[in-house]
Length: 303
Image 1 (spheres, rainbow, N blue to C red):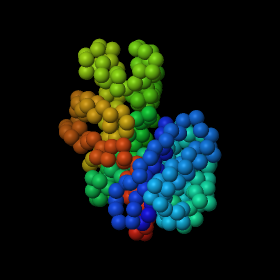
Image 2 (cartoon, one colour):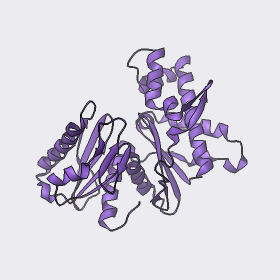
Image 3 (cartoon, one colour):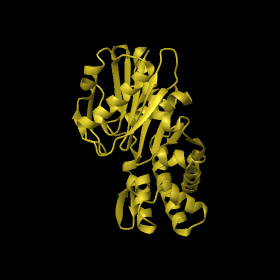
């Protein structure tokens, strides 16, 4: 197998190459994805792939598989990037366009969180169990697998970021209360414009009262989302990743403590012990693309 994989996000694109006999990501490259129109975004991905191939001295016809993780709604069967909130694609024929340059490649594409979830599921070896992957980054999203099969429901199964929580007299989504974006927006109002989650966490460690209140509130909100996930699906394992958690792993400890604090029924005692930090961290999406292309090659499917 000679494969190219790409994890396409709202702010950056990560791409890598996988050789025939290895499961190691080689020739990793990155580029920004902000402020590009639909075709320019495609051309940037293409440029990353050709940059990798030049370094590896490969020709397009030598690429046998391409794996893509894409945010938002993806039509994996027809190869369409249907709708991406932070990207300019609307029913964009991604597979068809890639086939022009890579005529012999089999192309596997799916939602980026599903790809990352599959990568983590493979690493944790949860073949017979119910598994949940939660990403806390620019937004908050999740994906569920049971015995290796995705639980997609009607299309948005497991999306705890859409959970509505009380915020005074309003109902606001978990994502708009506790994502990296939400924390940043609040920090910009309280502290300075351009304040990041990392800077808020730094103030939290220095026992700043406003930062402490912000971080603990976000942790409580996320814990409530996880509690709902455990109540409805009762996963054997929940793996948490995404930029906010990967860069501030101590935040996960706060979330787990808040989860422990809100448990009321003895049947759920100890669920916080089933919540773990991502093994693959920032590479979860790329490895998920790699593992999905491998599964496709063997004739199996996690769909």
